[in-house]
Structures are given as structure tokens and as C-alpha cells.
Length: 115
Image (cartoon, rainbow, N blue to C red):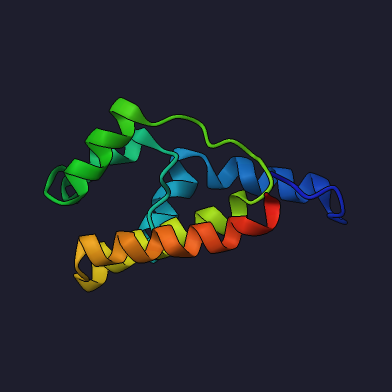
């Protein structure tokens, strides 16, 4: 998505097209391991790390049940909590039950302003 206030719309569009390409996503993954480009199924098939747990579980579920995210008020706040919580579970080994419970509290708090 490109902001309507972006001064360099053409350049931003070119960058997004490149970043979403196989080549751009591969560069991203090579330079930011653990922060993979989730939009490229082609990279999942090429990366052996994605075939091992826990990543295989994440991608299997994503490809089976994943749906486009709705762009609604509060999405940014919701997404930030989910990304942080998922990262805490995967990378820090925090207890899933406690982490998800805190995520629910944080999401409810963040979205309360939209009710």
C-alpha cells in the first residue's frame, strides 16, 4: 500500500513491485532472517527451514486457512499485537497460553477506541 501523501509515488510503486518479487523477497530473507517476506509462497517451497517445525506448521496453516486481511480501522493496532506476540512465542519461547492471553488483553485495549 502506498500512502496518498507519498511524494515519490512512482518510486514507491517500483520498490513495492521489486520487494514482492521472488528476487526482492529472497534478498529480504537473506538479509533479515526471521523476518521473512510472508507474501511469497515460492520462497517457502525453496527454503528447507520452512519445512521444519515450527515454521512448517505456520506455513501449512497459513496456506490452508489464510485469508486477505481486512483493512479496517484498528487493523494497525491489531496487527502490531499479533506480530509481537507471534514473534515472542517463536523466537523467545514464551509460554503460548500466557502470551496469547496477553495478546487478547492488548487487542481489546487497542480496539476499545473504535467501539
